[in-house]
Length: 203
Image (cartoon, rainbow, N blue to C red):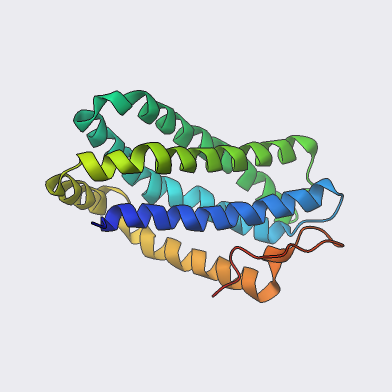
C-alpha cells in the first residue's frame, strides 16, 4: 500500500538529488578553474536551505519521534539523522550566504578552497543522509506506524510545518527546473566538457 505522506518524502528526495547533481557538476567545473553560474548556485541553495528545514525535515522529525515509540531499536539511527538535519542546515546556510554575496556583487566572483570543500561535504552528507533514511527508516515507518499515526502526524504537520510554504517551495523548484532545462545548465561540467545527461532537463 502506498502511503501518500511517505511518497511525498521520497519525491522530495528525488528532487533534492537532482539539484545536488547540478551542484556537483558546477563544483567540478570550478575545480578546473572554470567559472560556475553563481546566480544558479545561489538560487539552488536558497531552495535547499528554505524548503527542507521548514517542511521536509520538520515533518521527518515528527515521524522519527513517533517511530522511536513504535520501534525503539531504531533510536540510534534516528539520533544520527536528527544531528545530520542540524549539520545540513548549518552547512547550507553558510554556503548560501557565500554564494548570495558573490551573485549579488558583494564578494569576488570566485570559490575559495574552503568554500569548495564545504560544498563537497554538504553534497556528500546530504546524499548519505537520504540514503540512510530510504534504506533504514522508510521501511520501518511504513511497517510500524499505524493509519491513525499517519493521520495524526500529517494533521499536526499541516499546522506546524509551515504548510503555506509548501506551495511556494513547489513553485520555486519548478522555476529552478525550468531555468536549468532552458539553459541546459544540467549538462555543464566546464567550458570544454558536457555531461551525457541532465537530471532536471525533462519537463
